[in-house]
Figure 1 (cartoon, rainbow, N blue to C red):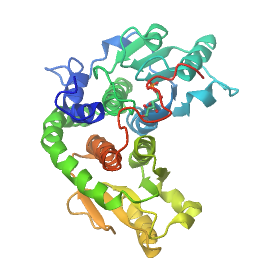
Figure 2: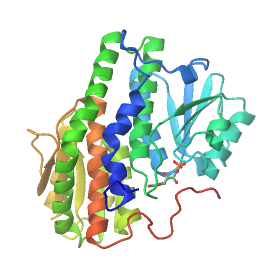
Figure 3: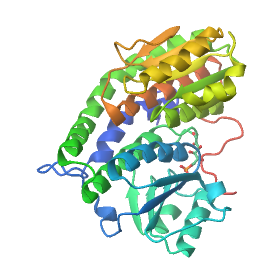
Figure 4: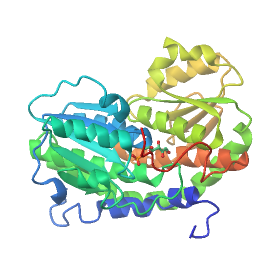
Length: 360
Ligand code: F6R
């Protein structure tokens, strides 16, 4: 059942190259390289998008906001469903709701969808479980096609949501003409090469995570920092670590550190930094200098050739722009996994958690 792996979580992390392959299958036209999303072809392109989700799915939504706003120039509001449902919403003509849920049964997400329905918003559901409530209550359903996710901590589901959301951002960008055919083709080409690169890297990444886990397992707290697309990934890295290893972890947009959190930094409070080779790298670098100046140890997840402060460099190959996230995500997942294994925790069944949160 676990395919030779010790835990479902590890199996599911290692399945991600296949998950990406399955997520793009049939969604990129062989001849034209254009993205084709038949499931939502009848729905309008939104004037504004409301993304509703919880937990890891919420982080996927935060990540997608950057892409949809940049490529499709559609304003995106991302909100945890438990807040969305109880807030006095201001909807307007042209709004569309996008519900993201692996299980398709999360109570708050479903309640948020019902509010969108009462206000006559078209609803797109992005979910993994076929025939789930989210699928049934949507006007158009995009399935993530990740296969069953057994481990309570969500891993491959987020990867599959990111694939679908990236395709959605490209599709809307092309339809609106805000994304050029060349730029779209470059992205889909990179996406098609991604499963191969990831499958050759995952084992190496696991070893790096194992080594870091032996070094950092005594930490009582951790920061995860990133900017741009790295900022929602930092939130996800912190969530994974806390839920399976029970180590206190906070994810922050790196620029927020000096507004308070940096007060916590000392030699006992390490930072896991997401530092891809991109235009924001110098900004992340200066945030890390401030961490180092206060004696904080740094693990920097980065690309070859970057110049940034760190105690431990963890290099992964550079894929380019949004695609880099698909290597950073499993690195964060593997780090949390190896920390929890090293500490002897019940990785697949963490305390106090259920796979599907069907009550409020
Ligand atoms: C974290 C985790 C949860 C879920 C959340 C939403 O590892 O599993 O945070 O992401 O409960 O679940 P879905 O996506 O099923 O709505």
